[in-house]
Image (cartoon, chains in turn orange, yellow):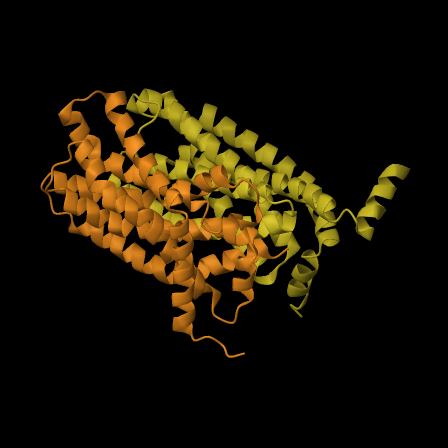
Length: 228
Length: 252
């Protein structure tokens, strides 16, 4: 048996996860619907005043997207653990970190990307000025992969436990405070007509760091959690 | 001939030796903690002069600041023990890391409560979204996450390793959270006490504070050792040395 090359293993992994996600399209729609409904609740709770909604729009969209991602995060490895394919991945000759990186990429593409696509709609529901929306999109493009990567490490840690949903929230939310601060800071600065590049650059720096380190940490965490 | 120090440390890593060592150190640590704590509280609450601006209300500092130091110090201890546990797979390090977490969480909670009591007369509010307060709150959640993850596993050693990994992720994240929150909003005063420079605090207020710091450290040692002893007995319940201890207790 010949060993598959790295690039072919990566594309196979990515194609498998995307196919699986596509076969269950309903699951992809769930976080999007959740985000829409949560955003819709804010005007009901706070009153339909334009100025108030405008002021909180950026933050509400960010937090809503974060919560919607958290909802989907739990399922990142669960089906693979159930059918044992994750164990096969651990003992495969290809580096585990790279394979997990592909899984994280597939997860980001299927959960975060739809959320980013509808985020202008969410922002428009709360009357965020159209000029700020590109900054919001940029901030989300930087912050959501960061959350996926960080979340993947924690999901891997809880892989050996049952019922990890609330625990995951408890572990992830404190760790993603900086991402929320910088993303919201960029949106708020753009809304006030101030330069917004600095917080975006910080997010980018954190993202670069996470892209390098998180798959390695994820692999280490998975080995700990699966090793019985 | 300084060979005995590493040798002794090596021996200390084994559960029965540590169990005996912790058992003999614990009463002394607890007694010293009580004595120094009482002296420090007397010095702080009675002997130290009132503050020219805050009056007597500032005296909560003698609880608040040592607890805040301990909340970070214990996280550091937990992080180091977690690192040792993951790299060398030493059972004792796992136990120390996991048993430190509840004590650290308690100190963090005390810091938050006393800070909020202090904030009410001084800032006019129980809580404000200030940088230091927020990072302390995040620290509490990190502790709770570690405790929660530890208890989520059925196998305790596996849970300890997973939670140790989380503690290490947290230790990387704590400075990032701290600086990002600082950049976001700050109201809390800067630190008054500096180890190397000149402290901006009068001597008769400073000594009770430093003594209190010592007392909390000793209390931590006593509390940790007690918890570790209990945990070691539970973890090693099938081993010979535990049976010997149990049998000698029965005979007594």
